[in-house]
Structures are given as structure tokens and as C-alpha cells.
Length: 134
Length: 298
Ligand SMILES: [Cu+2]
Image (cartoon, rainbow over all chains, first blue to last red; front, side, top):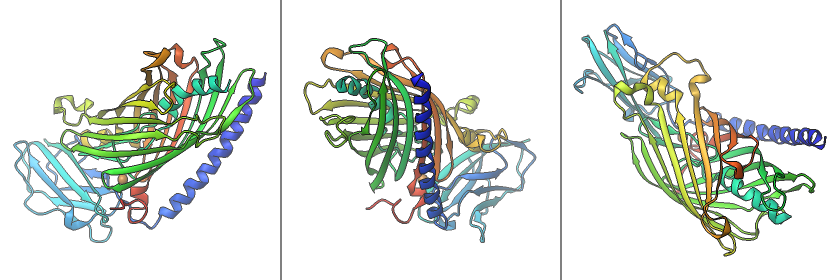
């Protein structure tokens, strides 16, 4: 029955170490607040990836961190690869987190969205997804 | 006895408990997560903590006896240039085998260098090379070995986002692999081929890039993964013997950190007979401190 007590003590040691680790983690997270985050990833997007929609008036992606408007872009193209948006994508002036582009009246078919998001320290992420207009 | 314990721990410890130089790795739409037992192909600024528990066999004098190993490991990687990183790490381990006193202490210091050679964003492919080393005698006498090891390693990752639309459900899959030949400074210590493979399915990738199926958080931030962390002895009397673990688990991603949980299933009889566990917290310093310590020096 040494094993039982062994496991208990192991668990205690583990718990203590884990708590210590969580403290470090907490300190690091607090230290990180107020800093710009670096790798922008989409939080919400409309249309959604793979969604079948009636002709949308815009494509809008909200990221988990602020973008650098000058270097970020969003292009929508049709099934033949031809760009359908004529206006340039704009980044929301206050939060810098939402990028949107107005769309002309789209016919039925498959469309591809390609985005590039550059965070303010120059870290660059990109992504692409499709949606279908019914 | 120390030798037996050291040897028992060595195979699995090197194969699965001491990852060096995890990284934040992006190729096109793909982010390769910092997998726990097999190093990912990226280079980045990051800090990794892992706890591992497993029983390893004492194959030598007493068949059937085993050592219970708890290991707390930490690793810090720092980018020198955006493509080149140095890493430093160690682990504290506590080993107990039936009928023997507990052996505990710090393992040898691990130093690593890694260079990202090639990234193909369209095909979500990434290739890096590096050398991992453990400095002999830098750890405690009880745990660390007196000799050093050097392991030149190739790291690769491939995401399947370039598959055609008809195979949409497969596009969130990715595989990564590592292959490293380990040499020891002591000639009587056998060399080993350390190899690892991971298969991962990225739910964030599915949601954002393929088809949003409306998964709620935190599930939409999870990456189920299976890792194979193996070591094949390539010289001496153990030549040809392979030990390692198969680790199914899940990684939870956020913009600045990652949490992981995996089971460690011995891959064969020589690798043990009971299931272990790996627990990870991982911080992406390039995201947390992008303007200071998370930035490449040059
Ligand atoms: Cu990052």
C-alpha cells in the first residue's frame, strides 16, 4: 500500500508545482496586458466560411487584435478568380479590429475571400475561405 | 542501480518528456501548434512548461519492475533572427522504482538551435533544421548523465488546406514530423534515431477557413492531436530496438498561449505497460511581448 501514499504525495507535489506555475502564468498574462497582440486571427466573419447566403452587401471580418490598415487587405473573387469588389477594404477607425469591404450585387455562385491582416508590429497572418450565393 | 534508472528513463525521457524549442509556426492559413512530445516545425519566441507522469520499465536486472517517473520541464526559445532561434531548457524529475529509494533532481541542461529554411504558404508546408544537445554533467548526479548528446534534427509540417473543395472535411488536417540522429559524447553509449510524427485536426481552421459549423468556444479553439514520439537505438547491443509512446490528446489555442493535455500510451512492451499523462502550458512571447523580449534580436 505504499503506492497509495506515493500517489497522494505525488499529487500534492504536482498540485503545488502546478499552482506555482499558474502564478507565473498569471504574472505573465498581467504583464502582457496593454501590449499589442501580434498574430491577428478572425474572431467572427460574415458570411461564415462555407455558408450559403442570399447576395450579401459586404464581407466583414472581426479579428482578435488591432490591424494596421495600410497593410491589411481583403479581396473577394468569383469562381473564375476575377475580383468582384471594386472598393478597397476598410479597417474600422476606432477599434482597428474589423475589416470590411462593400460588394456589388452578386449573382449565384461560389466566391472566395482572401484576407491579409498585419498587426501593428508587422506580424502578418493571412487566410482564405469560400461562401456561396444562392 | 543508478545506471538502470538512468537507462530506463533515457529512452522515454528523450523521446517524450524533453521537448526543445517549440515554436509558433504559420504557413499560409495554417498555424502549426506547439505539440507536446514532438517539436513543431516553426521557430519562435516562447516559453513552455510541461508536466509528465509515466511508468517506464527497468528492463535490466528485474524484468517486470518499473520506475514511476514524474517530470516538470521548462523550455525557453529566443529568436535571434526571424528564422533562427536558440533554446534552453531542463527538467526536474522524480523517479521511483519498487524496492529502491526515490531518485530526484534536475536533468542535464538542454541547448538547441533551429533554423527555418523554407515555408510554402499555398501548400502549408514548412521545413526547419536544427541541433538539440544536452550538456553532460550539468544536471544533478542522480538524474543527469555524465555524457553529452547532440541530435541534428529535421523538422517538417504539412497542412492539407490545398486539397480540393470536394475533400473539404479533410482540409483541417495537418501532419508534422521530426527526424534526428542522436550521438553521445561517451562512445560506450549507444546512438539513437529519434523520430516523431503528429496527426492533427484543427477546429479553428475548420471554422474560419473551411466551413463554420457553429462550434462554441472553447471547442472552436481546440486541436485534437495524436503524437508518436519514438526512439530507435542505432548502435551497440540495443541496436534496432524502438521505444516510445503514442499520445492522443487535445491542444487549446488562444492568441497568446496554449494549453495541452495528452495521454502517453507505450508503443510496445519495451516502452512500458501503463498509460502516462502529459500536461502543458505554453506562452507565445512573440504575441505577448511583440515589442520587447518577444522580438528577434536582429
Ligand atoms: Cu505569434
